[in-house]
Amino acid sequence: MLNAIKNLLGFGPKVDFAELVKQGAIILDVRSSGEFAGGHIKGAINISVDSLGRNLSKLKDKNKPIITCCASGMRSAAAKNILSSNGYTQVYNGGSWGSLQHKL
Image (cartoon, rainbow, N blue to C red; front, top):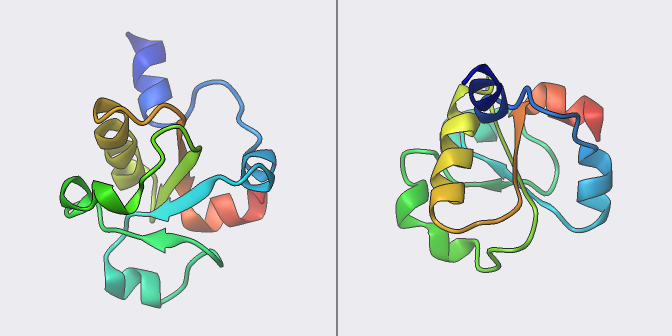
């Protein structure tokens, strides 16, 4: 149970986010548009976690790696859950966008 919670929150096995991006991963920032406008990772797509379920068509390839991020890691964990439950196969919680940016 503890491992499942760790994985959900992005504290599971180490992920090489830079390598995923080199392989074409999508960075999905799930903060509000206002938060996104205040700063984000270059090339990231912004779909708020509240509207993600209605905007899955913007993420056409369910087998392409997707790295979710937000302000702290909580919304990105929720987004990872939404994507995984809708058949996306390679979804990673990148945590906060600022922290993720340093890992790229």
